[in-house]
Image (cartoon, rainbow, N blue to C red; front, side):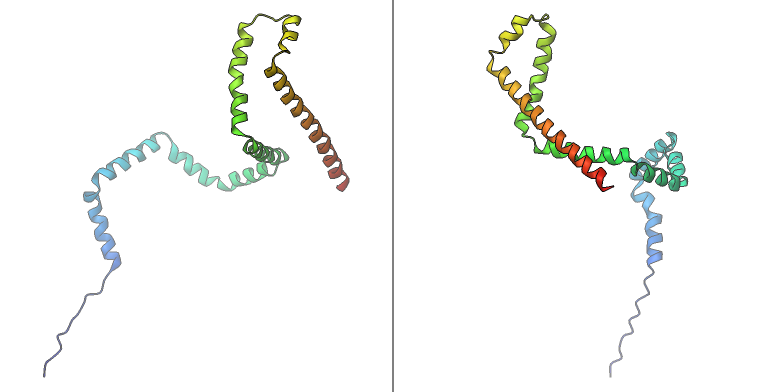
Length: 163
C-alpha cells in the first residue's frame, strides 16, 4: 500500500516579510528616498516642523480660540453674508454681469479723458437710449432695495418682539 507523502508548508510570518521588504526598500527606491529627504530637509530649514510641533502642543488652545471666534456675532454675520453673496451671484445672469463689468473700464477711461462736462452736455446725454436704459436699471435696483429694506426692518422688529 502506498504511503502518503508528507507535505509540510512552513508557517508564514508576515512580520518577517515586512522586515525583508523594508531592508530592500532603500535599494529599490533610492531615487525617491533621496528626493523625499531633500523635501524633508527643506521643510526643516524653513521651520515647518517646529511650527507643526508647536501647533500640536497648543492644539487645545487653538481649538478653543477658533470655536470662540466662530461663535462671535461678527463671524456668524460674515458667514451669512458670504452665503447671501454666493446665492446672489449664482442667481445673476452671466451675460448681464458680463455687460455690467465690461462697461466699467470704458466708463472710467471716458471719465478720465473727458474734461469736466457742462450742464448742457450732461442734459444732452439724456437723449441716449443707452443712458436711459441704464438709469431704468439703476432705478429698478433702488426700488427693489427700498422694498427689501422696508421688509428687513419689519423682520428685525418682529425678531426684537420675539425676544
